[in-house]
Length: 107
Length: 321
Image (cartoon, rainbow over all chains, first blue to last red; front, side, top):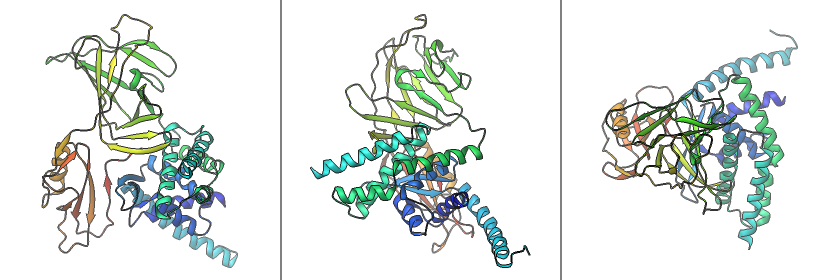
């Protein structure tokens, strides 16, 4: 179960960045609010670091109306493609699991 | 008193995370710690967190150092699984003119040109160990171009008179650190064109200079002083020179990018599909007005019209690793 959650969280991060860039705290809050996706806010930073190193996510600095400039995370073209593939797989996977759980046999 | 107490709490917390992450590669470790330090700043601003108790609550909400370290080890594993042949990172310790090579000197091409007639020479190896190599350079007039064929970091250690400031520079594979002799018979100036320098105090990033020029002096010994390490040296970091931003409104994207690159600026493209009259590939807005001055290496965002339905792809040139 942990494995499955871990696998899905990275795509949740990318999905949060699909429509707009966000800073770290915003991402962490959105994931903590989504029940049980991450155990604590800080655990997203190792994940973000890997996504950056894999070229799926990149960062830039932007002035903030309040406080110091913030690092924003944004989705790269590769990240967008990767997310799109995941969404397609996920929909098929979810459908298959739902059917098996409901009927007890594969359709 | 309370402000100092809070700084102590945070420093302690970040130090604990740093020790818990000791088995994580340094570059990754710094990214994680910076992310968390930034998170703390953002939360303190957004949620108006004041007082040591409230800060303690914030830190426990972020997670225990062990918790974060466990997540980091999982990610290292995930990265390994995905990229089993992951290349080792190259570190260049410019401060000592010590080229720290992860596995040998083969990927480091060094050419020197003397005057207008370029001659190619080799830096000579004077000392090496498993992970370090020290090169001496002939004391003729020359420029040295060190090209690194993969992403690399250059670390410049703090000047002797500073307590804990640390400059770090990321060098892209495209932008080679350039070592240029400018004066004297035994000093080098190294100017590296880097993606960004993070100025750090302890674990916290207190400022970022984007695409800086790093000025750097080093005293060296001519070849022949076999086996001995170069001594002496001093360093400085200079702020980048200013350049005038061209007016790019109405220009095709490719030309606009070329013009910005020509004055040493980085480009961020922001596609816009819902404008009143989208004009594909044409610059509709620029983040710094034409005619204004910006430091070389500044990031200029260009809003570019697009007719097509596919989701916008942001091409960001500069990241701080």
